[in-house]
Each structure stands twice: as structure tokens, then as C-alpha cells.
Length: 277
Image 1 (cartoon, rainbow, N blue to C red):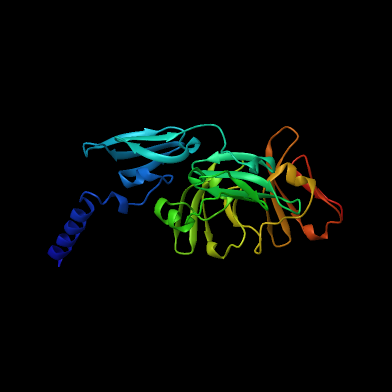
Image 2: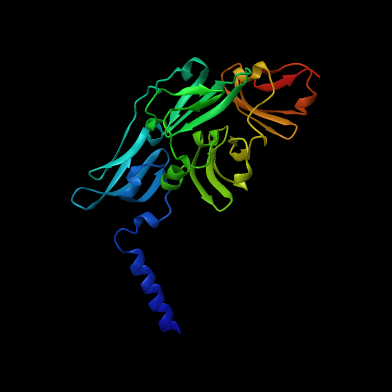
């Protein structure tokens, strides 16, 4: 019995050591074409580390600093990790009706205005593949290129849609569970998971290190001037949550219970959500 177990272990070890099996390993890094020819991928803070194959079919150790500043694809250039770290945002008339525009890897984030005057969080994945100008379509970033987003997510590891991907990393899906390491308001990185994430109708957000669904039925939030100085706004039942700016330019999480009892607009008072009842 022990002999047969030993043979089984040796067989598994031989299979795992065969060339070309690196792609079957668990990937702990951002999406990109480098994954096709790199292995042992892992993150060390904001540094991407991997072993990549060069043009002579040899493996070499390589790293890429400030990987979250990459715009577009991360590639393997003769065994070295490379990307474009251009600081400019992509072109498009969306900038006329969107603000807080920022880029993280191959995703474009912004707060855009809807036809009804709401300001909502929106994300455009794989924006570097847009062949035309990016637009704001009723609060949602869109590009004229028809893309199969689900196919790209399966191939390169994008998580489901949501602004959480701006402040979370090590994102992975296992069945109906979404796992990630997300940043808290005080700068710590903590592990979190969201069960039944496929049932989220609105976007997924990072609420101080926790993955949360926005209100089922859409991303619309109550009217008020708080939308000008608050972000990551979402509804959970009769509770309104948001990350709001203080008078000294810090950011703090705030919660307004029974927001639907508010009579009039909601505002941000030094990092705290307020309304008249």
C-alpha cells in the first residue's frame, strides 16, 4: 500500500514539474499577456515578481515596480516584465461629464453624471483596447469597440465589475465566492470574501476592507450635494454608506441610517453624512 502511494506522489510531482505547466498554478498578480510566458507570479507590495521565458526559451527572474500604475497590458519582453506607465487619461468626451478620473492597470475609473443628474461610480475594463473615443452613456463609461468582457475576464483574471478593484488585489473567484485583499481606510490590507457575488445587481465596492454589493436593482443613490465630496457610495437596505472627504482633506467612512426618511437633500458635513428629517 505504501509503495503504491509513493508511486502516486512521484507521478504527481513529475506532472507538475513538466514544462508548460506553469499556467495551471494559482496566479497572484494582475492580468496581462505576460501570464502566457511567465510563472511563479506573485506580488510584493506594489512590485510584481515572476520568472519569465526569454527568446532563448530560458527562465529568468524579473520584477516590475509600481505595477498598479501600469496603463494597458503588462508584457514579457525577452524575459523582462514591462508596461506603459503613462500618466495621462484616455481621450474621450466623457471627461466633460465625469470627474475623479483615474487609471489602475487596464481599468478606467470615474464618477460620471447620469441624465437625471446623479453622480455614480463607473468602471471601464480593458479601456486600452478601445479603438474610438470613450463616452459617458447615462453615467456609464463606454467605448465603441465591441468586446467579450467575460471572455477576457476568464483569460486574464479580471474580477467581476465594481470599483472595489481600484483598492483591492489578489482577486480570485471560487464558485459563487469572490475573494480579495482590500485596503482599509487606515491603509491596511485585509483578506475578505463575498458569498453569492453573482447575485449582485449593482456594482461591488470595497467598504473599509470588506467586499459589499450595492443595492439590488441598480447603482442609483439618493440625491444630495454629498455626491460631490463622497465616493464608494452604496445602499444596503435603508442604510447609506460612503467614503467622504473631511475639511482637512482626509477620507472617512460614514453611514446614514434610514436615509429614506430624509426630507430634503443629503450633504457631507466634515466627513459625516447628514440630512433633515
